[in-house]
Every structure is written in structure tokens, then in C-alpha cells.
Length: 213
Image 1 (cartoon, helix red, strand yellow):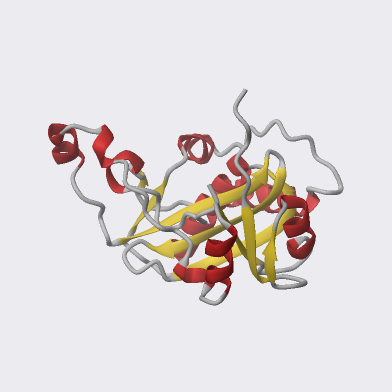
Image 2: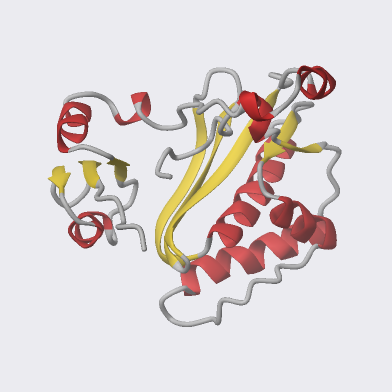
């Protein structure tokens, strides 16, 4: 059985900023801290160096997967449409601390962010991010398309139904309150936005990625 690789956690914004050597120590700094900024690194030196910089310089870095595809496949997929926004979620555990956000696909400028929430799942976050993106584009009367890397979230939006198996509790009530609002919004609103699956293998991680994999 392979040994789990140790990670180091940089916290830019939290109850205390710094580099932490365990997830539990990191989690203590970000729990119940609105707008927490943190990321994992493989070495202590990298994490320490990152602390000197800006959080936004380290998230959403595009890891290339293009080598997994043939030239014909890459040509067929083409390039991303930059007249768009991209959404993504991050969950530390399943369930675990969850947050989601939307960014401009080309510049990666953050357009909205919610969380961290005390308990959620990645699927719930992806669903909320997608509906938030739809509402954001409708509010701004925008013709941009909407990218997500979650087929599950796309299915839930299409069906106007959240099929999460996470049982409701007082701990995840804030998340499910948003889910209920999102489902209601889908039932009451029409939208013209085209939702498109982000082609990770061709383009790398989605620009809204939190970079914590």
C-alpha cells in the first residue's frame, strides 16, 4: 500500500495566516472565516514562498493534459470561447468545507465567490456555482456562455432538481438554504445562456479551479 504524500498548507487569509503541516491545523484557521484563502503544496519551502506572494497568483493554474489526446481530437475540440465565464467548486473532504466561485474565463478575474461553508460536497458546490453563474449573466444581460467541468451539475440544472445524497443537518443548513433558492430560481426563471462542458483534457484545469488538488 503506497504511503500518502504529505502536504503543506498555506493560509493567506484566515484566523491566523501562515504555513501549516496538517489539514486539521489548516482547517482550524479557515473554519467560520468568510473569504478564507488557502492552498496545499507538496513541499514546505514552496508553501513558505507562496505565503510571501498573492493567493490569486497560485490558484487556477492550468495543468496540461493535452498529451492524452491525439492531434485530431485536439483539432476537433478547438480552443475555449473566451466570451464566457467559468465556474468551479472546491470541497476539502466529501462532505467537507466547501466553496465555489465564478471567474472571467480569459483574465481569471473573480466575478463572485461564496463560502467557505462548514459542510458541503463538490457536487453541491458545482451546482450552486452553475446556477449562480446563470443568475449573474441574466442580471447583466450578458450573451457570454458558461463553462463548468461538472456533468453532474449540468444534469441537475437541466432537471431543475438537486439529487445530492448528503443528508440535511444543522451543519449544512446554509448550503441547503442556497440549494433550495437555486432550485426555485431555475423553476421561476428562463435563461438563454448556453452551458458548455469545459474540456479539461484539452485545455487544462478550468480557470475557476481553486488549485487545491
